[in-house]
Image (tube, rainbow, N blue to C red; front, side, top):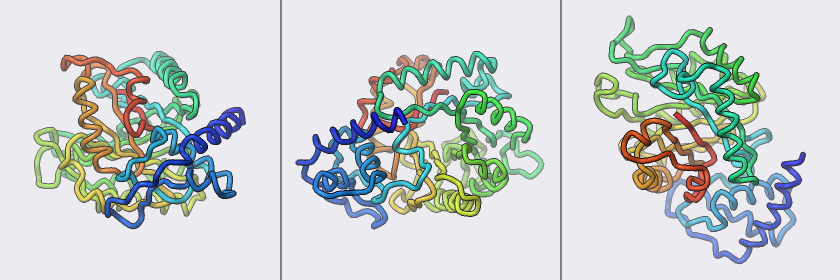
Length: 339
């Protein structure tokens, strides 16, 4: 309730500050997307509280100036939706690998303590959106070897996923299960994780980089997913939400090149699923900003994310960007991932 009261106060200020803006013009994309004009309208009409909060949160994320090409869902999210009312700060990795990310690089208690500290930095940098810590676990890893079924992917044992569920519960965090499909399909792998995705605090990530559509070996080339792949996965998540009476699921789609996601305009937005296009590239700040502008905000879908690499951003001659820097991006990402 403390955050809600504070948010209502900020909402009124944001709406008042933006009430004289000229609404943008749609860029001719899908009719399922519209500009956020609710905050302007809210200054003139009596609207439900959830619509007011949603409009104000989006104005905050968009720095009060939604550009003509930015398109999002018209209506306020379903009850229990995390976005855009929270900023998710996630640790990424796999428990079998120290190299895959920070999640598996540290011992459990050290990792959770560091995540808590990192989340605190983001909360201090932006006091409007409540920070939600998360563990983003790679539950299906692409492989260079074909394996028995020649799918070039390895499914993690449920016992390992159970460890992540327990860790998240102890830390007050949510969970993302990530899929690197190899020669399989993202929706096929997501079905294998349905028992976990039916839990209200478990969400999903899919990685086009490791989706090999032309028979290549993973890691030999950068893979790709089409809007149809993403729509199949979001359709499955929407079905789970409806069948189990769940709050909306967050679906994170990793991206750092144009070819990784094709036909972005055809990605379907569903009220049961909140799609985050996550800037997944590493390098110095300038390179990361360019990738974000080019393939995340330059081809807008719904919400945006930004990945930070503790090692690779520095190894390539760059440095780790700080929360205050990332928040200056337009729009400011609502999903932050550390690898």
